[in-house]
Image (cartoon, rainbow, N blue to C red):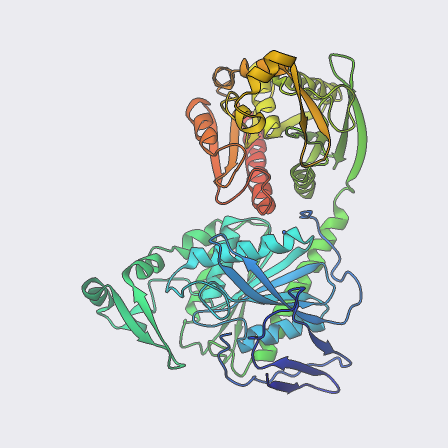
Length: 593
């Protein structure tokens, strides 16, 4: 493998291979060292070549640099939601925050702009990750024209990968088509607070005839595809389906959905012949929290303006980080307090209060054989903290730190435990903004809403609709026969290694608990959100659809590919729950004013 040396000012030398075709080592790491000793950086274009060669989730602000560390470049492979491997290069400086760099049409992570931006960010101590979208560069998949939303999905997979590694996303940046991908991402998700759009296209109906001819639709209808040769001499096909995907992607509508809290920078060259600079001006008209930078004389690739582009981008990202740190400093310090609440049976329920100082509080309930320390419970509490909303996660009796004996079933008793918690905080003049439950906890919050009518916002995460199902799968088809003979069975918990006892009485309690009837008793004024994953191996997604049929004031969100524990979808789950709770709070405020 040949090596190209790029010369920089003073003694800085960057050594990079021509190609990353070599397989990774056993640690899936392909390290290339970079050593720094100069304050100034000069950019040069690399040789033209075409290489073919998830755990705790944080939304809270972190310092720019975690610790001084010599930058390294690591090859990282991330599966996307379609099972394709996305290949990228991680420029690790030790900062907790990471900038994700997205290439443009028919390009790759090896593009000069992507490389130079990664190096510029390194110089500022900021880690970055440049990767190939599916069907491009080293990543798996077939190249498709269009595919804008799929590229936003690829970006989602990358972001969730780094969230799962306890990293925060400082910003997402995209060039050309990648600029549209980052804007589409920001329109769909609210977990990134800084977006950089470099020469993205505002009107996707434009530029097609110039590239493929005025009769492109006629040709597509007659042949089904157009064969196109690109500037490198390679060819690709444009199908009618992929063309319609582009024509039906509305960037204007997407930009209107970007949160006011998300800072967006658009950078465009005045001499761009591929996408006119007018598109940048259109973005500036409709994106609320927007900054526009026009680079005089720059073409679409910023061929002679790489250093200027890098300076603009790094200043924006550093400014965004400073702003976030300033906002975090102004926020009330979040404190976690252990709170003990007696239930109606005299048992002490133990929980952790995430106190932000808000009047409102969200109660978070765990699932079967779980505790307040479950990944979902901890991550949701952290996400609510980040929005300034207090949360309380606790152990049902017989679980975790709470007193009592663990019992299979007894859904009504868990609803009673929840009532004791709610009464405790209501007596302290707190407003219950919502109750959230996962799995068996999802049934508990629905049972609560059917018995007590004092909560207006309920979130059911992967709860079970038919409690008669799932028993034989867990304990065997002869469960009732065994219970009839001995009165109980002892079950080994494969996750914890411990065991628990299932009695005939507890199984009958579950069989006699009618979730259908309970849901029919929920008030029409109570807003209910059900979230469920299509890959749930424990409770089938069909149960979510059954809840949607019978609960009157109901919203359903299906998370594609998510399993029962949302193992690879923690950030998406948090985003969905936050959006629902915040919208509910706004509705309640509007109704009371």
